[in-house]
Length: 125
Image (tube, rainbow, N blue to C red; front, side):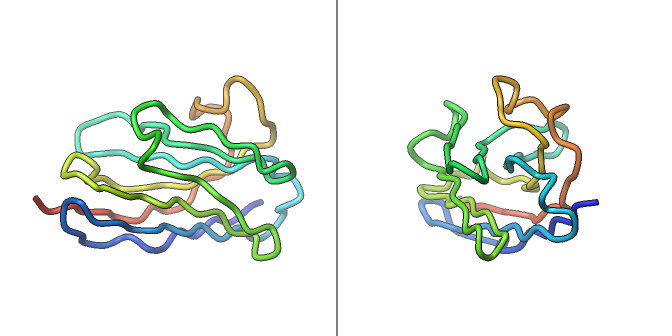
């Protein structure tokens, strides 16, 4: 099992920034990539970005490209989601997830086998 714990959410004004963290523990050797998703009330879970643990390759959704950036710190088993120029529509619960492979389907929720509990981000306008 891989355990994932997100942190860093909170209330921020529009135009502000937040950095979310996700610490992985347990059988982390089985994790090849990490992704960030969000889910707003009444909406489907949305892919934001992902990163490969080994190579550091990243892939970001077009909807947040240029505003959100995924990064990692292998020594800390931690991935980050830096969010800038936040908008009210970014309000959602944000989740990190672990995948056992890195490939074309990395934006698909079905590629991920472990999920964190989520952290709430609220952007006030």
